[in-house]
Length: 394
Length: 68
Image (cartoon, rainbow over all chains, first blue to last red; front, side, top):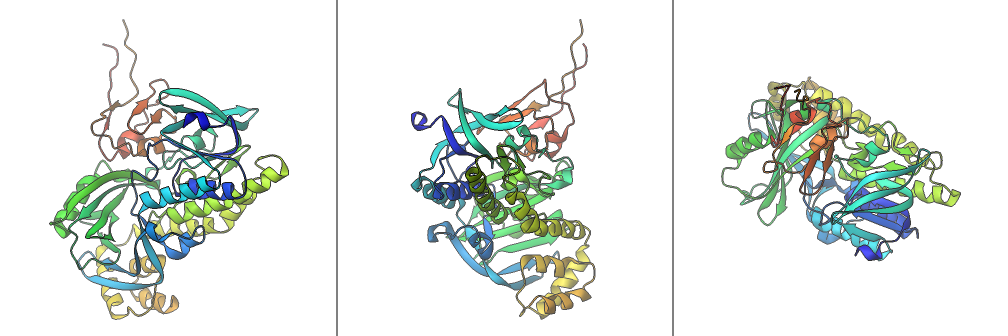
């Protein structure tokens, strides 16, 4: 495979996750030469993700193929600390994805339009000429290789080094701005679990929430996330085992993964001459629920549009790439800022408030609510606001 | 004879899930993560301990050897 890699490309995408692949696909479709470098040997694995995305969120960037979707649902269940269960309809569907299949699918779409792909290849250095990124070095089967590009896209996830090497300062300074999660893909899920479920309660789940996302065939992703500042006190793996023993004593693990998710602001600077960052690498994640697939894919799409413009202008300078950060900050970037404020409020709510709110919601479940609406309604300090919120968000 | 202070944490590859949370919080760019390996640079590490604090697997621990 290495012999087919060219010496130069229009764009090199570092990281074959949802953001990088949507970016690569859009660039390849526009006729640009694209190389995708993925450090792991298999695209789509390991899965460190609940695998849920809103239908509208993903379809803004790419229309999912049937085989990427395990389940489509239009309601969620909230489980309060006292175990009250509330089913809430959502205005738009959510998909539970098979990310392994989806990522291979999008990689295939990029390849069909001429993109080159190399797995098991880890980008380790950025090459610069007078403060402009011009290429990179990557490690493949123990050897360093060099490849040049008009633009390098850092889509290398929460553990991004490319954004660090580009000087965009992605290192998370405040440990409350990272969520550390543990998740099982579990089998033998009870039959009454049919839609995504969210569990709250300070005793079992201090400063976090647990999720159960059924995937069909008797399986579900069961996981929880805790703030980075709390990990030594409450290791997520241990909390998860206690949670499962309490609620799902008969399930069996098929797969176990740990992961970190950014829960703070996205990078102040998303671009430099010859480089831009997208997805988790750019810290583009909903701070309230840790959802990053839709944000990352959208960033991939608008970054690709900016790159096409820049290449037409003759140079991928920071100035020529400006439409990407501009669109991000004016659009989804604003939603992310709101999610950050909600996260702070949510962490302060007492169990008693959630129990009361859940019981109130049980009486009024006809109005469809978005996920953010539900958090707002259920977890604000004043339960009386819930009825107002429900009638407002029809 | 003086033994220099060692900054970098001790790493247990048996416990590590290679999730990258440690890399995400390392401002010194001291950690190189590959698919199944992790390398910490003693030269770059500033012993801020953030990687140790966020590791969900408990795969990183502090070591302190000063002099003899």
